[in-house]
Image (cartoon, rainbow, N blue to C red):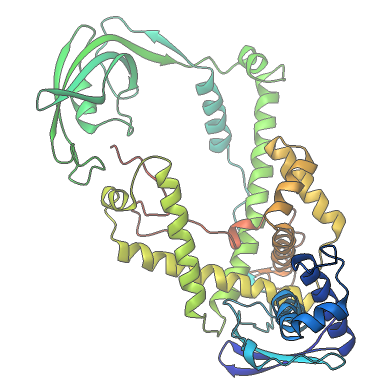
Length: 473
């Protein structure tokens, strides 16, 4: 470290940092400033960049040099002081540059007042009592997974003379108009839809039920008042629909032949055993993650800490900008979107704020565990994670690493890995309710990203601004 630093608390979550830069470093910074200025100043008789210091000093004096030292070096000295004091700022510092005096041969001193992320000290983070998650795989779950696999190999067959019912498929032509005028996306030929699906207009489901091949329907659909396209909102759309074919889904028999077609196994029994094994692995992994998140949630909810308003506002602004950017790629404004999902801006901001407080509390807990346990992430672990992510994305590790470095994200990645280690430690040392004599044991390798990553607000069962439903329905 180049600097010495100490701090004092000014008010809650705001500190004054006193920084002292040794005289030797000040002299080196002055030399660098002279070299930088020499590259910018033209002096007759000298090549640019080769003007001697004594000449520059005689022509310019020392004030421009001292100003260059401040502009070029203070940010680095400030960052060193933050690292030395293990502080995480949440705002730009207040530094009075006019009060900073520089003199060659003497130390440089300055002060910075800055709002910082709260720090908490945890006790009792080992042995948090959690509920034991269900890890048993039932016969019904195995059968459901087998049926889902059969669904993937199902074929649609024409059902001559059959009346349409839920689960059947209708091959239709349709033409839609509003006030007698066609509209974009309102017509199609040979369109296949599943009757009873939630992905089509309810009026289509209602009118198609009981219909047969050759039937011609007039279907009226009232567009929602909050429809994103104001030209269509609240209007009645009329559809002429021709039922061209009725088809039913036929699942393959669950037998050895199906097992050979759908898997690497020769018998249905072997396939079911493999399904059971994979379901067990998945349930075990989910149970481990549940244990970790239960322990984290309990500790976070029990924190006696006041989250700075600035952190809540910064997070909320980030979530809003992110949502607006994603909507923009679909040509939808935030205002239209909120109308479509029946949300107000105030409600969205409130839910983003609640989400922010929860996630920040999670971070404070995990950071406290990291400090208490002295957890570290080695360079080898960092490179291993980059390789893992590169493989998932189909990229070369060096390509992904370069992309991360370009956005200065390596330390963010290291911090994420540290928090995952802390989350795993919480799970390893949690105990099940009623079984307080023993810990839950190894929590495996499940990812703890959900604990600190932004997730959609749960709301009250309605779709909220954290999720993007299709507003065309």
